[in-house]
Picture 1 (cartoon, rainbow, N blue to C red):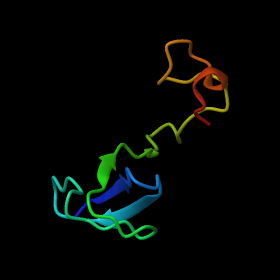
Picture 2: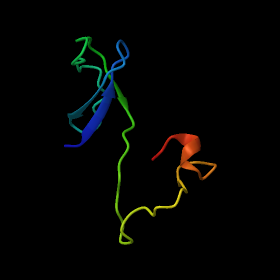
Picture 3: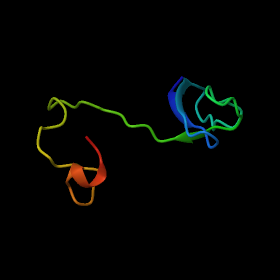
Picture 4: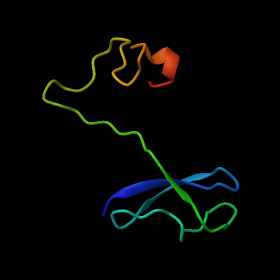
Length: 74
C-alpha cells in the first residue's frame, strides 16, 4: 500500500497515511480538529539514480527559472 499525504480543509494540518491505491481522503478524520473529509495533496519525494542523486548546484529541474530560490525547493 502507498503512503499518501492529506490536508485538512478546516484547520490546514497535514498527515501521512498508508492507504489503498486511489484513496481520496473523503472518509478520513483530521487528527487535529477531528473533522471528516481530508484532501489528498502531492508529496515531495527523492529518487536517487545511478549518478548518486542530485548535484550540489543551484539548478532545479522543477522550476521554469531553474533556480530553487524562486520556487522554494531545497
